[in-house]
Image 1 (cartoon, rainbow, N blue to C red):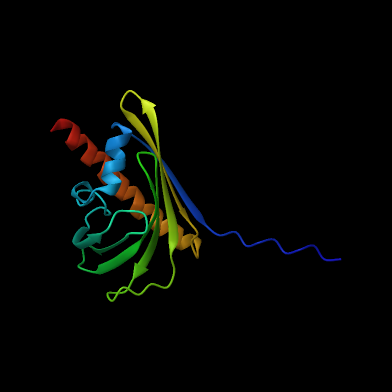
Image 2 (cartoon, rainbow, N blue to C red):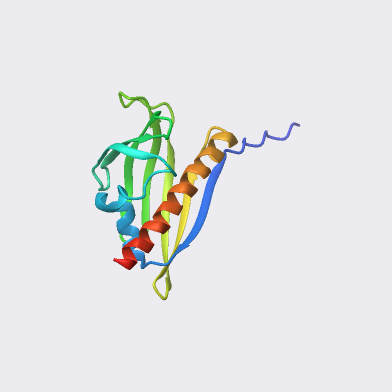
Length: 157
């Protein structure tokens, strides 16, 4: 008798960060456009187009412009918004017309640590390849660096 084939592992990404900011503010930075436009992109990118309907069932779509001028379109749907602790949305790279071939699911979990600090756990699944996961890890890490810097600026203002 042959043993059943093991399911092929599908790459996932988990990033944990602690921010020196209250959980409510970190949650707002993920769910309010006036905050998102200040940090929600990788290093040296800008966002010439951003549209969002931030509610359960709502969608978003943005153009991320790379330093070399290349445009990368991304969009998805908000599946769950549980203030101030959890956000779940889909993430799909799109062509300029909005067509996507594959989507992942991103889950943001926020835990109050006390003393005005918040632990963020970022989880994205499932990727088609380890290379895709690794590329996303770089982009999300840079975006989270931007978020940390933005939160410092907010605290100083």
